[in-house]
Image (cartoon, rainbow, N blue to C red; front, side):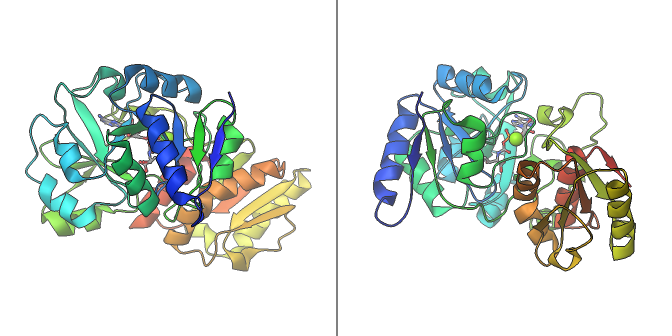
Length: 339
Ligand code: TXA
Ligand code: MG
């Protein structure tokens, strides 16, 4: 199959969005940008199309998908009952990188939810995406647009690298401004629980709902979010994360680089701009090193350094606070080890 590449400069945007919306409605698989990462979309009401998304990604069938909507109303239409906190959270965080887990009604096919009683819903924030979802007219089920186990794509060329020839189209909306996947919040438990941390932090959520929010225990026997049990985001090179207590001193990182070099490894360094030049074969900048910059660039960095063919990627960790919780969650899932 030839994958259509749909550009969105001012002269092509309207037609590209129309084309992508029509393809989605007709049961095709279309990759599209969101503020977090690119999604691999299918009409959520079309079981065959959703099944094809699982097949194309190589995604286990027991890992449910997020349903993307253009308006909170469209999410309500999928729910059995609307949780008390839904209105407040949506007012504050939608459109945006917050996914809510709620009980669904009979409108939602089992393939989307992997047979669970709950569904994940989210209203993404990019204008292009909202236009697309609005014109599609049906909710769009979409996981991240990577092959299963690869870093999530944050630009259209990364989607192409994984899925060219396997999907009908890619809508190019440039680089994703957030860079890591949405916060997933379960509203069906007695106390709202974060199943996957993101840039909407626990503190952000607690401020709005004025009550406690929990983090799911990643080691629980039955993972609350089926996706959490799979290895994730792995680059081809082995990723070594320098623990945040040590990462602040450039000398610890420099020592780690030197050790890999003397073991004969080609080293890729994924680090704040100021740390460049430790003898690495390839460098990918994490800008000024703030958690927001880490989030925006880590997946692009893992892909870029892989493309350079390095054997090991070293990355200094950051404190697991605020957005740093989500950044370290992704880094450690991708990492072979932490030193
Ligand atoms: O930012 C994002 O969330 C991106 C963009 C494309 O929207 N999407 C994304 O989808 O990251 P995916 O499929 O890669 O991750 C969805 C996560 C998985 O961990 C999945 O197990 C969990 O959400 N999930 C989906 N439905 C669920 C449900 N009903 N109950 C618990 N967890 C659920
Ligand atoms: Mg994913």
